[in-house]
Image (cartoon, rainbow, N blue to C red):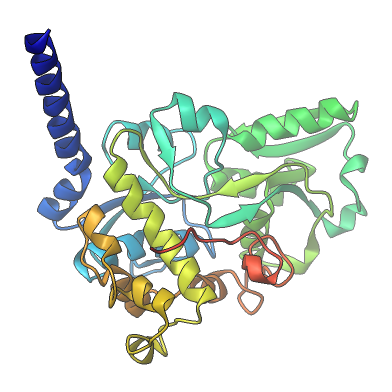
Amino acid sequence: MKLGLTLLAAAAAMVTVSTAAYAQATLQQVRTRGSLNCQVGLPTPGFYALAANGTWSGLDVDMCRAVAAAIFDDPNRVQYQSVTSAVRFTSLANGESDMLSRTTTWTAVRDTQLGLEFAGVNFYDGQGFLVPRASNITSARQLDGATVCVLTGTTTELNLADYFRANNMTFRAVTNENVNVLVETYLGGGCDAYTNDKSGLASRRAAFPSPNDHIILPETISKEPLGPVVRHGDQNWGDIVRWVLYGMIEAEEMGVNQGNLAEMQRSTNPGIRRLLGTEGNVGQGMGLPADFMVRVIRHIGNYGEAYERHVGANTPVGIPRANSLNALWTNGGLMYAMPFR
């Protein structure tokens, strides 16, 4: 009996050691490589925009940059991989990238059956429809019999079918895995409406030659919680991405931003001190320095700064945050960080 218990304990210890070693695998690979491999989508204003000089920017891009800042104290140590919806999960699962930050909806099947893990929500969205203003369509219920452009291999495609079936309506889908092809088809009159997350509709419309010639219909036909994704199994890496996101949200709630960071590092507020690593050591359990969030805020800012910089009301995308789900929970929204302690 004693021998059996001893062997069992030894086996458990070996599992613990191997699990701990595996838990550091992605972080070690990123450090050894010297850069983070981060998947984004095809260039889209506000979320992952590509400038003529090859520089990426956007709300989802800032998530990649924030993780790189936490690890390297340098947000530019990112290798971006621009992928279509159809291949994003395979590319992440097979190790081609370290994380996915690409307006991706958190669903049960994706979270449990694809070998992936969602690390939080950085944008709450919902699916809608874009139509030409000249069509005089003012409601999605007027789309019975319409031709609708939709990305294939997405929840968007499934939601479209569900909505029309639930409302006893018919439609014909025009599908493609390349959003640029779909947008060109829509602008060329190849479909009556284009459907996507409303944030995606707003960002695409902002880049149209005549944005005011197109309207987003009022109906929101789905829940689309969008957030960064990592491979399942490397819990430490998932924790890093998750707590970088939470840290940006927590920083906004506590009033910590790029402009006052130096002052806040001298704060006596226990919550601020824990967030910035001047008290306690949240980063230690993830293999990060105590001041990893100082790095993130210095280079990227808090969540609100990133939001307003890329998709806020004063940007071409123009998605007001006030009174929306993306407002802080203290302002009636859903943005809520787990406690730093």
